[in-house]
Image (cartoon, rainbow, N blue to C red; front, top):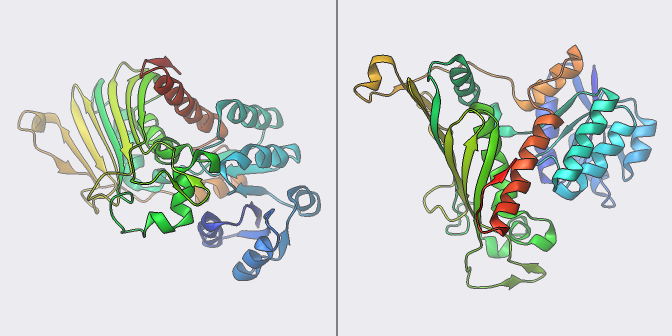
Length: 348
């Protein structure tokens, strides 16, 4: 039996505990939250045996195989470093940290302890994402020349997810004082991971950030100053050039994640908003001459929770790690630097 604990029992923690509960021979035996009473209520709701308001106390008392960190972004590093200090394997929500220095501290500390790590890059859960990465790695697309990717939401325009003016879960995402890195940190982290996972590591990038007028500059304690549109040009290490953009102003798109990869022998078109079997399409071989696209069958794939538990059982590092999380954090930090420099290219 794999024994797990969860640190941070806010909204996303529900997805973690439910996902782990669906895995055979795996049990969440403890949870922790610094907000008084929150961990106890979460434990009662999810039938978790033990609840704590102090992570150090939990780590000293409980016999754990792994810990899943679902705190605010700023708390990822201190929580993870504490878990690592106690020699426990750890999974962390994205982004790995809220700055590259802390992400590297997390990566290096886990290396020294030789611990298994994971980052919850959830769009890798889709079988089409995994198949797209396999196609590029196989060489069937040839040399990759051009990439275009997007992550589009519209909750600043419409109310499909509710009214952002009245919802705390939306308002804090628009306020840097409340820990938000804006659309760059919230959506860009997924888009950067998706592009680098499928195409390869970035070499350098140039980024522009924009905070648009929303008709009001402040709502209660929330100053609405975080970026809400991002445009990034990427030069990949394999020589490809790409454009990646993300926004909360994409009218007509509730949550659309897409990536198109063009090589000198073929291309792929991934859109996670399209239903199976059209989620992934390719143009290959003779079809290149007629621009004919075909859907690709994508076999089932483990989700990030299953991969973490499998890593704990086999003692072998899974697909995501603090190493990869730190790379994506470097892309985020470089994007912020580039934006401050007027969109100049920055090495990563």
